[in-house]
Amino acid sequence: MLESRFKLQMMITSALFAAIIGVLAQVTIPLPLVPITGQTLAIGLAATILGARYGTLSIVIYLCMGAIGLPVFAQMTGGLGILFGPTGGYLVGFIPTAFIIGYYLEKTSFTIKNAMIANIIGMFVALAFGTVWLKVIANLSWAAAFTGGFAPFLITGILKAALAAWAGIAVRNRLKSTSLLTTHRAQAK
Image (tube, rainbow, N blue to C red; front, side, top):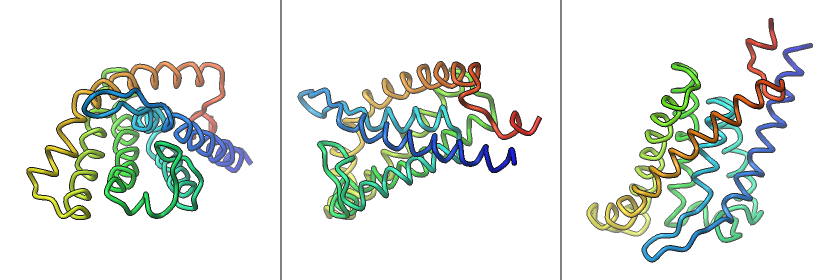
């Protein structure tokens, strides 16, 4: 009984985080070269708070919502055209990004230092997926894909990774202290 209750609770929490990602994807701070969006910050938060399995599930739910046309992607867009368009690699890359962030934290510990390392690794994974996809879809050279799809996002990516690490661990600890977020092991005891 505890096992099924735990799974249901975590599936609902994952769906809630998918909605949070959809909301934060609409937050944009315009800058001269590239805007800062809340989407990648939300990915880091989901993985840092929920871990590998349920953080990744929240990303999959988010991508499914966008794929069926709900306007949850950046700039209130949705649909398969966005998912398979030039920036779709970043979206698809969020799946391994969330898994790697959560997995790293589960194998080490949920501390700000480890979350910072995990989120920076995750940032590079998302940027790598997006850059390779951009190169293939837009038929760019590697240099052009790197210059347009990777390099401009490094500084803001590191800042968002740090924020996701700090805020994610703070929220996770608070949720655990109030028993709103439990781990499987804690439920079984």
